[in-house]
Structure formats: structure tokens, C-alpha cells
Image (cartoon, rainbow, N blue to C red; front, side, top):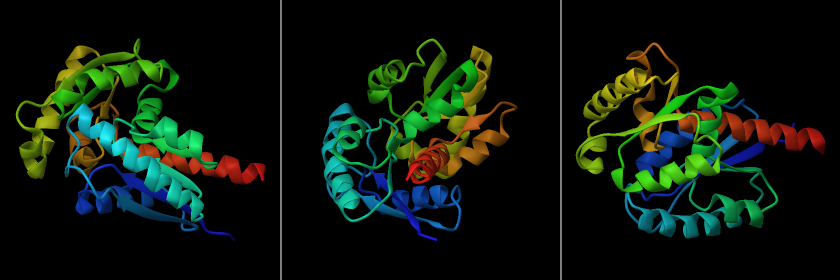
Length: 223
């Protein structure tokens, strides 16, 4: 049996985050699918502004194209803004998935109303645009953002889990039927946030792994 290859593209420069997200994806796929990962060489350790998102997009496209040429079967962009998704998808002949795309598809499945929780206030406008672009504007109940510097909150897992759990409970009060965690690195505490709620909590990285696998399966079945 041919081993299929998925590459996770981390738009920031944090190697630990890359390992975290690759591990989450690896847990979603069978043993005949290998998961590798690439960390961007330039930029911040976390992407918190539209300028950083745009800069990451250019690198994502370059790295993704190189991996496609080297035989990777599917690419997963693991930044919640899906940087470079459209350009990379147009330039390679393999499935390209974004974790925001995948996360919204799961959170909004069958018309379900959902909220997004995240840590990056400077990306609020771009996230609303992305929600509209993917067709979920009418299903989005709220977009809630933690208070304080994102880097400080994300540096302490307990603080991050508590802050996101607080927001998730607010989303329940908003009337959401599901909560989508809005960030690849935030997936580290997804299980803890889920324990604080009685509604579904969608980990976008895990969702990205599942959607990438589904697209690979469709592609290989057609060959």
C-alpha cells in the first residue's frame, strides 16, 4: 500500500507549535498516512496582525509549492486566517486545506449556529471577512476575544484554558450551539475547554486533519 503524505504548514516560526499541531493531525489519520510539518523561517512566533498574516501567506505559498513538487499528497495550512490558501490551491495539483475552512465546516454543519473564540483582537476584522467568504456569516452568533496581550495569555496553558473556557461559556449565553476555537496554537487546550461546556467545541487543527484526509481519500479513489 502506498503511503500518503500530508504536510502541515505552520505560518509562524514557533517549532514547538509546529510539533503540537502535527501531533494533533497525526492522531486523526490512519497509519498508512504520514504527517510531516514545516515551520516558516521568517516572522513572529505567533501571528497576531493582518500584516503578519499577509507576510506568512507569501511564505506558505513558497513552502507549499516546494513540498508539492517533492511528492506530498495534501497540504494543511494551520493558521486560523488560512494565509495563502487560495494562491497555493491555484498553484498546486493536490488538495490544500485551511484549518479555519475545516473548523467552520464542522462547527456550522447542517446549519448549526456557532461562535468563535480567539486571542487576537487585531485579526477580528479579517476573521469576520473570512467567515463571510466561507458562507457562514448568518450562522456566526458571536466572535469573542480574550483580554490582554495574546503572547502573554498563550504562554501560560492554564491561563489560556481558563480564558477560553470563560469565553466559551459566554458564547453559550449568546445562543451558540457550538464553539470553534480560533487559532492553531490554541488547539493545545481544546480538550480542556470542551470539558467546561455541554456543547460541541471544535478544534480547528483536528478538523483540518479530518478534512485533509477526506480530500485525499476522494482523490486517491478517483485515480
